Image (cartoon, rainbow, N blue to C red; front, side, top):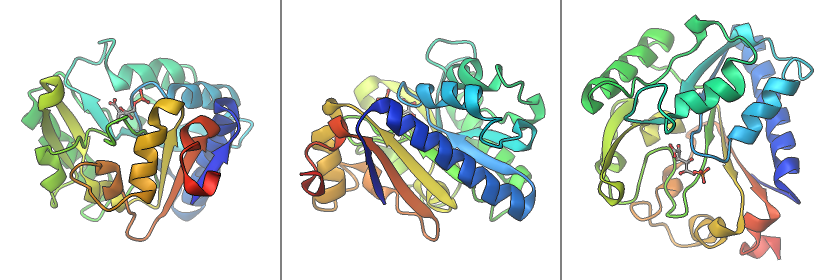
Length: 241
Ligand code: 6PG
């Protein structure tokens, strides 16, 4: 499903309401809501909005368990940390219980951090754990989470979390695997801005080329996939015209 909004603000409002709807379904079904947060810059506006309006949207933050789709290999207080961004924008302002925060430990060696996260997911949810919601961004190269074009993590079909070396940036990342994301009940991309219009058209309307466009790997096996776009990002899509 593709949802196009006339501004980033309207997109974030719709995404916040979707977050709350996914929360309600999960809490009614099993008493808690597990969400994997996206990193980067786009989702911060959503997290700030959720901090402000979450209670009014019916969210009891004590029932929400926070995970991450990916993390940079830096300490949690580093300016590049996806955990730090979400903690400052949402988790701290709404006083999420520490036991509900399941961060990727970027301060560890990459393989150790990935193995620890894979284990933590299985401890939390069992062998066939799936997220209730995974939030994702998309880079202008078509990557999502830290599944970057032509990197080793794209070929990992077993496991839930893995380390991934990204030659383009000469850096290590921790990321959920595509299969782990595709097991989720709901997956929502948040993509804004004109800079992503061409790659978004390639991902959504171009030929299948997941090694080059890893966002194409995100196809939930049973769950729902929603693309939240603003007009600027959707401008090249055929159905948008
Ligand atoms: C990260 C993210 C990454 C991000 C995209 C888009 O750690 O950087 O998880 O996948 O979602 O790079 O980033 P922007 O939202 O900043 O454009």
